[in-house]
Image (spheres, rainbow, N blue to C red):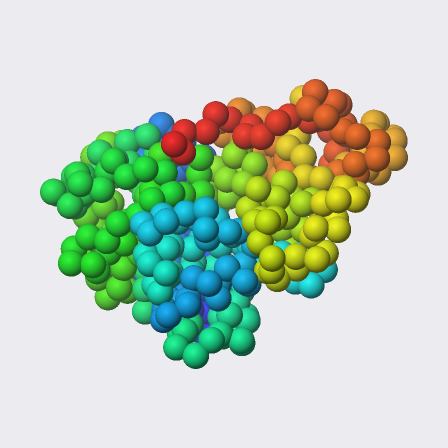
Length: 371
């Protein structure tokens, strides 16, 4: 491990499993295990997979007025949910670009937990601390808490086996709801980033290895195994889910990225509101599209999208990969809105000088089972 990378609380477990480790958001994280990314991807689609996502930030926000303060900052409207629910939301800049996307857990109006991306966690904390009312505390627990993701159609079965009575009690959680178990030391939420039925668990870093071991035994018993961030990426791309730095960035707004549903348009204030309202009214000059290759080839981020072979550039691939489920190349791309591009239209991706024909499709590219 490179000395300047932060280790996961489960680093020793990944080394023992002979994982391929790589840098992700300043952390040394498992990219894949010896069975390979395709096998890991398939295990999540067909059985279950266990991910270490402890690189994600963990930020408790507490005190009187905590929810009200957050609601004036982040895009989504916390008034849409109640205690025990989680919400996808965005932090935007003044021009409407996305500084980060994240999940927020609402335990009570004075008790929230924010889970931002690793690379942006420090900045988001500073922004939320700036202007926080007296009594509202924004705390960085990035190094103190671990985050595990259990995903797949048999994830509820694995959770119940690993946690016993507590696992059985939380296996039937509604989508985007959470509860605390084990005396409040483990938070379990029915969410995930794969398009499958799944859970994310937040707990003290020191307790993470024992829970990882129990969950991994249960996952293996139902036909799955450990999964790295490479499989997480292919799974989320099949769903059309954005990855910050690719489909969302400070130059890409939620209106362009198809994430306008995560904006509380009726709220009087939140970061970037004025610019986003104006863009929404005028219409964006580009939109995120999902593409499926109709020829042989694998698109990659940064490749140019054309309106036909030898034609005019109309967009740029933001994420591209081989879909293990579809056995075809797939991509997400920002494509010009003039002329309008719709599902069923044919485009071309320039793959290192070779024209790869693709079809515009409506995401998700494979059926979602999150609910």
